[in-house]
Length: 251
Image (cartoon, rainbow, N blue to C red; front, side):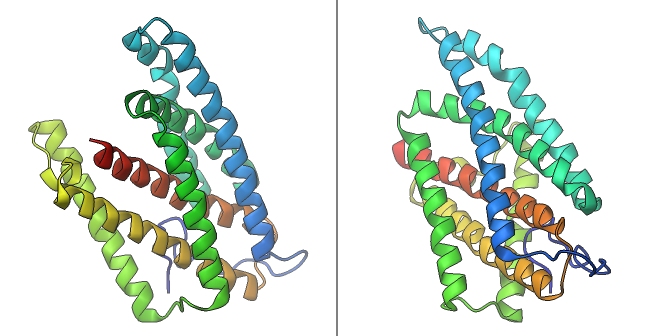
């Protein structure tokens, strides 16, 4: 059964050579940490660029200063994600580059959000790390068991949320209409964000399970980078949803 993460598609770990050094869960987690460090470094650079440009209250000038890095990071990150998904052997190169690109984008987004809601980024980062640690602990301890029904339920819910976001973006782009509960700050909006955060957390469990299955099948060592990349994709999603949830609570 596939993971809810689209980059951990059913055939990602099939038909791989089983000679040489093998993939391990601990190795994958280590590489995930390295990707996160790269994202933090480039994110910190974009953040500092925004802060320097915003001295004196020139927020518009600061936005202009980081916009190329934000949009460039998003676009390059998407391209690298597609390459990594279909060329897993090169994940050792493309995954770090993806983390660097995402760092530029997330650093800009985080700087803007923190200016509007001071302290929100630190809260979101701490919550993201906490959720990752808790879900890994729950998975490793066996308190959360990944069954076929569990996988199918999380996958269906993830697909539904993705479709809803696509429809919302299309409506906003062409009609300037938005789906209210995605953006509103009332109980319904906060409840929706809590639901999505919970779903992102459950996707981490599916990622752990898929990587565990790959290690049991004797996937080659370079697939640790691919597994780390997949976890990074889920963590970026989780972080962004936590930012959205906290901003709704602040408003």
